Image 1: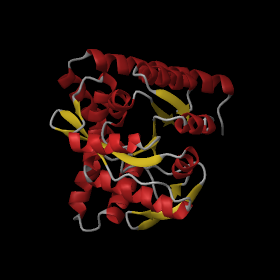
Image 2: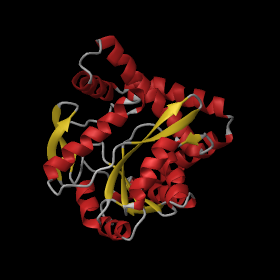
Image 3: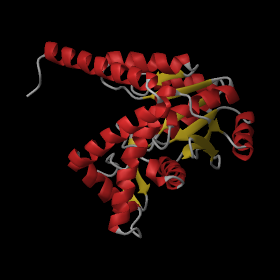
Length: 282
């Protein structure tokens, strides 16, 4: 039974106020206090979100079958705790982010050839990649998801644009994003979660899974090179990496498989920082 429109509106407004209040508090609190608070929330979530725990354990069993069950449980728990740590750093935007010369040079070499589609995952503090690539490219944008709350959506867009990141909604502005990319620069797409639009079935950690075909098609239309870009925690900061660049082939199946393989590689580089509790297979 759906809620009446006025109730839905008030619920969205209440959630917006809660999120903004929490975000503001976490920015003002000393960082160690904010981290302890979010880790406490992660512990509570781990105890009560039984469905998500089952999803994480099932996906880890498929992706990392050689791990003992107790170790898979530890990775799943760590992924939730890491999400809290990374959300704090993404909110505060005060953690150091390095882009080692070897990886930066690979990225810049691809950029010299023309437009670049940065293929990314919900792994590590992914929002911190944007400001670094703004500095490198001078022209950076991202395809973003609709949070289904207009006020939160507007707030997130303002936050990103304040960091000089152009935003394109993945449901309504794909054509505009494609035209923007074709004119040069870099466009980031996070393509590791279960797709909502057009998809093909491709291997994901050795098992068939629905896979977005849009990123490779967008890159092909715009004449862009696909460059896998990742970020992982190193001590109190973060380090970016750049995978092997490739051009889309035009075959949706081949391109989806290659994108998945690149995403798997960056996830395995820091497996405790990926969102294992997101249902990827079914």
